[in-house]
Each structure stands twice: as C-alpha cells, then as structure tokens.
Image 1 (tube, rainbow, N blue to C red):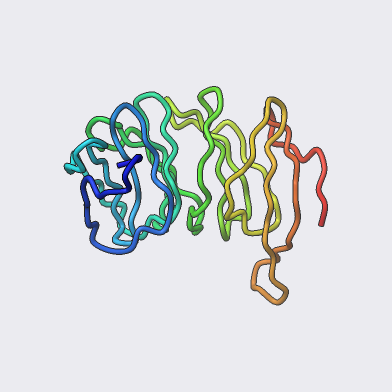
Image 2: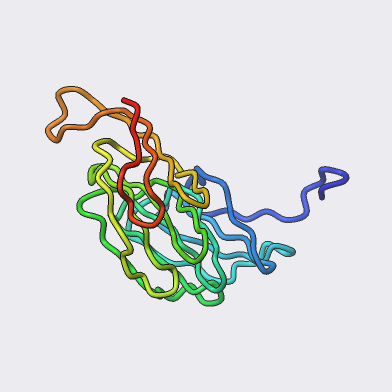
Length: 183
C-alpha cells in the first residue's frame, strides 16, 4: 500500500528477480533468473501468464501497446502478447545475451547486446530489424533515446577473444550510424 507501506500481495517466482518491473494496463510484467517472463494482475498479484525463455531474464521489459519486449540470456529479443504471453516475434542476437533493457519510442525498440557488440532497432509491431549498429563493446545498459539520437555506453576488456572497448556513443536514431563516440 503506497500510503501505509503494508504488504498488499506477494508473488514468488522460481528464482531471483534482478531487474525492475513494467506496469501497464493493470498488469505487472517482469523477468526472473528462472528463465521466465511473468505477467501478474497488478491489483491482486494473481499470475496471468508466464513464458519460458529457456535462460535467465535479467533486465526490465518494455511495454508498447499489446507487446511486451524483453531480452534473455537465450540470445533472443522477444515480443510477447501482453494479454496472453504468446510469442509475437523472436529475434536471435548472434551468440549474445540480451541483458540491455529495451527502450521503445514511436513503435521502435532500441536494445543493446553483449558479445554481438551492437545496438539494434526493431519495429515493435512486426519484429523487422530497422538497423544494427556495431558499437565495439558490450552494450549491456539501457539506451537513452531522444528525438534524433540513441546514446549507449559500452564496456570493454583487453585480451578478450573478440575485441571490445569501452565508450559512449551517439547513434543517429533513423539510421543507426555513429554520430560520435568518446572512448
């Protein structure tokens, strides 16, 4: 209860919940280290559905209309039907955990990746890839999206089998081309 702090309901997933939840249309959506994405009734905590991604889900989902967009350590970015949990579309990100929190703006989901060292833009309704931009480092964090730019920070490591470097980048929101980077 927001006023008293008293517990209104409690729900236990199969493992740790490591990220924030998304709330929309009376539903609460979240991922768990147990590999599931859950939808609960926000008022009662009753389980509405859960979807098995096969691997841990460690970042918050983004909700856009009737879609819940969420990444997984299964190397996938998924859009689930918000009412049923059925997969609307699924995109494999080359051998790369999708731990970045997607950001949706104007019907496009922007998300980073780990070993693929890239940031992607996907049409939320169809799953069509709008663009992919190499960012040369682990893009684990949530992008910041403005009217014209997508900003992302990357992490790097010397001696890693695939070169990764730390930087802050500004990408053109329409094309994904790097406008600038600070290493």
